[in-house]
Length: 199
Image (cartoon, rainbow, N blue to C red; front, side):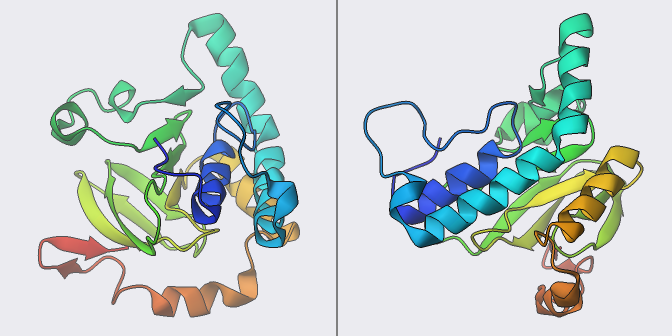
């Protein structure tokens, strides 16, 4: 789980919770510093509340699916990739929200770049719009500053395309900075780099 209750890790908690079925500001254990005591954390709470709200329609479909078919809303990737050795042997903190969203939460303080395993699929990077079809699972270096955790969406899902549009309208995804963010990514985002790819 999240490794501490520091300011940074409270922000990381908010990032992760926005992509689940229940958005809350704490883990439910003991007294914690809340978002209301820190301006930066309050800004992050505002940001992630918008993301959670923007996912409402998609999440509602998942809740209906959970009720009628028994699929969990938040899923371990092995449910969709049952033969993927990474998920079977190495374990992961990554999870899926339904079939169309892959989240690799940052679980340690001080992280600005994360090594993320992406399963096969056609994925879009939430914060830059870069896309990639991954034929077999592969590792990528992904920028992961606070406020932009490694989040990927299926580019073939209409809900996800709508989500990106809504988040742009809400100012969560800032389109004027997307080209700048793309250029700051580690080299070409999909070139091999010593057996590791930069996203």
